[in-house]
Image (cartoon, rainbow, N blue to C red; front, side, top):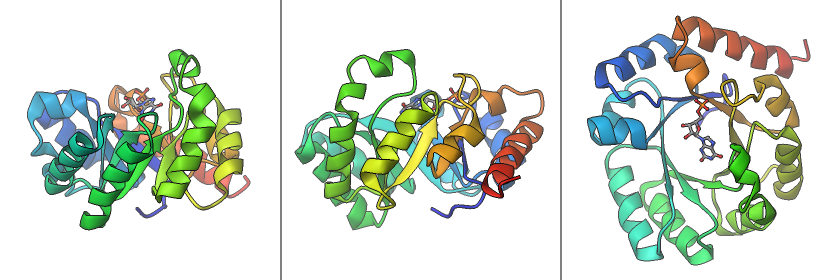
Length: 220
Ligand code: XMP
């Protein structure tokens, strides 16, 4: 995945036409589009290939099963045209290895959730986050998902993984995180959903956040 705008759109709308319209409006401001259960359950897996016309697609299915089932899920997702998949790390090394094995067959990427961005993410997952980051590194993942709502945690995770893994960070805008703070803390990409797709002008909203990130990276 190329790093240009350092922003990923989380496209959690449930209408196909609306999804395609937003993708068409904002593609130039994002490096990837993240799709998850809301859009795929509402419109079908084919939406991945349709959206892939605009940007690389990250399938956020937070895969969390036994190795064999993980393998079957990843196979379907990559066959459908996704460029990357988000999987859970708490299921353990064997389950993660299964995802990475299928991803490497397709030459695609795996992002591992280390800690979630909502308040409940601090309850059970946060204490395991650093261990999850380490197994993701050992297993050969492409990146981690770390919370934009807690930039200090992004900084800590970045220290553990160095520059060997990328970090994508959800929680900007609607959940209270600030794009420039998370990029400054060491995230490679921020993930933004509602602040863009619910805006009166998704294009203007995306442009504004992209500009904030650009200014942070240029030290302005
Ligand atoms: P909003 O509307 O809050 O959307 O900007 C955020 C998007 O990111 C997803 N999300 C997460 N995904 N780990 C993940 O893998 C997380 O900690 C996390 N927090 C939010 C959320 O489902 C939505 O698509």
